[in-house]
Length: 287
Image (cartoon, rainbow, N blue to C red; front, side, top):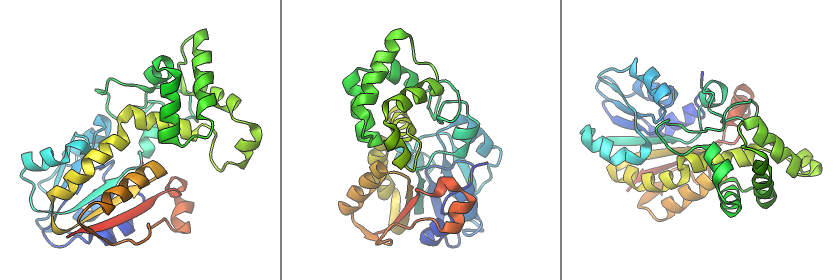
C-alpha cells in the first residue's frame, strides 16, 4: 500500500477547519484526503481527483457524502469543481509523486527493477506509451526529453544507443531499456551516483508519456483560481523540473509564501519510507 509523504506537514499547512472543503488533486489511495476528513467535519468535504482508473476504483468503494472521488486528471480541476458546484474551496493539495502501486503492482513498466512492458501510463486511455517513444521517436526528440525532463548528463549517448539498438528489433521491456542505459553510462559515473543509472531516463519517459510538467503548468493557475481568498495550496514535488515549474508559478502569482524554504522529510520518515527522500513541500496562501 502507498505511504503518503509528508502527511503531517501537509495537514499543518492546509490547516483544515470545521466544515471546510478541500480538493486533493492527486488522491492516490487517499492517505492525505482521509487525514483532512478527520479534521474538517462534520460537514466539510474532500473532492479526490485520481487519474488512474485502478486506484480510482479503490477510492470509489469508500465514497461518502463527504468523500467524493472522481476519475479525472488534475488538468481539469476548474471544470470538475464547477461541475460539482464544489465551493468554496479552502485548500488544494498536489502530491506529485507516483504511487508505490505504480512501481510495485501496476505491471506498467514504471520501474527499472522489474521486467515489464514499456507502458508507463497512469491512465490506459492515454494513447502514448513509453514503448512508442523508445521505438518510434527520432534520436533528437529522445535526446530532448531525456535532457529536459530527466536532467540526464548522458542524454545524447543514451538516445543514440536506443536508436542503434532498435534497428535490431523493438525494445520491448524495462529490462531491455535499463540494460542499454547501463551499457552507455561509464562505470565510474554510476559508482558516484546515489541513484540507479536508469532513474533519470525512466523519470523523463514517465513525464513525457503522461504530460506531467505541461499538465502541472496548466493546472496550477486553475487551482489558484478556484481557491477562495485566504485559502491554502500545498504542493509536494520530487524532482527539479517540478520544483522549477512551481517556483515560477508562485513568483508570478498573488500568493503569500508559507514556506520560505521547502519542507523536507525527517530522517525518521525517510527511514520508514525510502521513497520519500527526494520530497519537497511548498505551501502558499491566496491573497
